[in-house]
Image 1 (cartoon, rainbow, N blue to C red):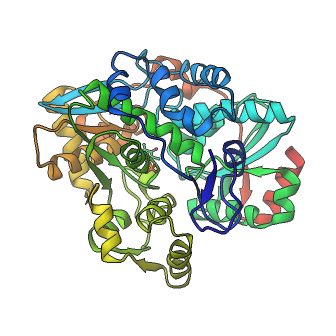
Image 2: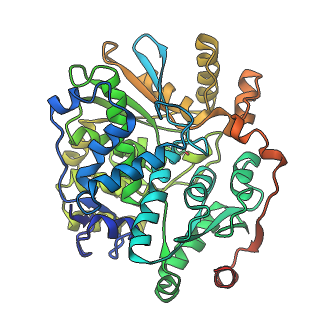
Length: 462
Ligand SMILES: *Cc1c(COP(=O)(O)O)cnc(C)c1O
């Protein structure tokens, strides 16, 4: 498979180079040149197959034969052996024809494990084959950091430096990162906020000399392989509920637009999806854009669903490329406007195209809380605040009750215990493999919000 940049000015790459490079050299994101098609008969034949088998079937057109089929199967097996549920991502029922897809059974308790566990094995495979080594630097406000650290800890192919804002992530989130004591893991608490951390990482990527010197690489959600791995569970969930003979809809709590965009791809590949609901918290740039057509960056507001407290939604650029008929020039033009004025406007024809598939809703904090309570009272299930945003939007927007509605549950409630306890009175317990999290030794260094200090730290610790 060949991959093209959304801005049309970077060279086409193959899968392995897309995996390692993350961002294209023209600032764009990589997408496959075409959508592989999966026929109705093939989808019907997925019934009864394991997650791993369906994962291979959905992803292999993007990866093989560049990576030989047998090798890729092996990587998939290893990646999902770390999940605590046999089904990897089980479905549970909330109400009549209303379901929840539990994506949080991986090692760090958020859906990001589904993609990052595979990414770790892909990096290892490709870099070992090439006898190369990379340096991963990332910034996290919570879930990405621990999932990325878990997927590369102890591997010879990579060092990882993860920046978090000092004193501004939850205790569970911090300890999930800082109690990993492997030599190739370097946790840095920056004296600043998340935006400062992200700005430091961006500055490193823009310093081309330093970037090449340490072979800098990214694991954030702009990496195509992450989006690709998330397509799979749209298939497994839809097939379990009767696809292709029955359409299904999904509601997806959204920040960077990676997860819900994977659902859009599943539809392009032939899965019969009725609606995709883009559920945001009060950081609602995506719901505003999809209703009015104007993409306008606002100020980030802290919420009880912090992993969606985002104003610039990187993966939205991929959808723009699709609704503008693959025109890199049009995407460049929109991104230029964004850079200059902090906004751009989507033409009505293109917006209509997006609306053929997507609905969107902004969910207020009190609605998130009341949904946690409602679900607990009616089912006894404890859900996390991100999941609650998706379920609330699903219940508001859902029109056709004969179409199964699947809300994506993106985090285990024990990751956000304060918000959950506040509403239900119950302190959600960490799963057994993490029960001693608060007794474990922590290792991290504190650095000022200063690029020079960060560079020196990285060079000293490589
Ligand atoms: C990252 C994250 C999201 C948002 O996912 P995107 O792909 O950025 O839209 C939602 N919920 C949780 C728990 C997350 O960690």
